[in-house]
Length: 158
Image 1 (cartoon, rainbow, N blue to C red):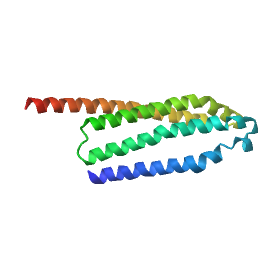
Image 2: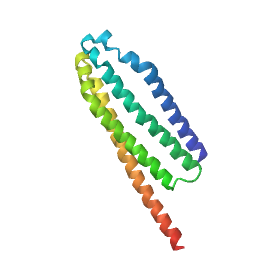
Image 3: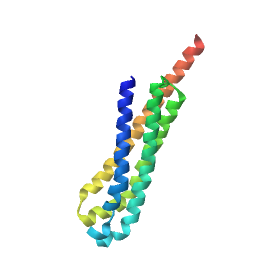
Image 4: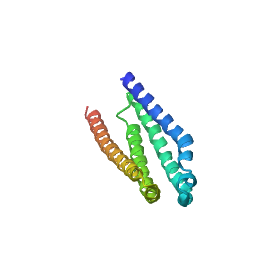
């Protein structure tokens, strides 16, 4: 089991590095609206604020994922700590969905001015993917909680 969790930890770490690089190098270049859409230069800061605000819960969810994988490594997968990590991942995914819902009017204006409907589609994909992750984490959290309750009940019976 250590190999699988190590692989997942490396993948989570690489995803975090890629998103961090995008936040540091890609977004400031992408947000220079005055060069390619001068009439929307005023949307530069709302755009950056929304995307950077969504990056915070994203990185926190990655951290919680690494914690969850370390609990699995330590054979503590069926613990309240794992339930708490899943709960935090669920809240992070919900927060990302809400932040991108708030950001959608800005993305719509940018897409409409630049004639790029894919930008709106990308925003919708992020919203729905985050929502699916939140639902999946909630289901896993409930399953894990009920498994812990059954285990605790069995331990008390014996």
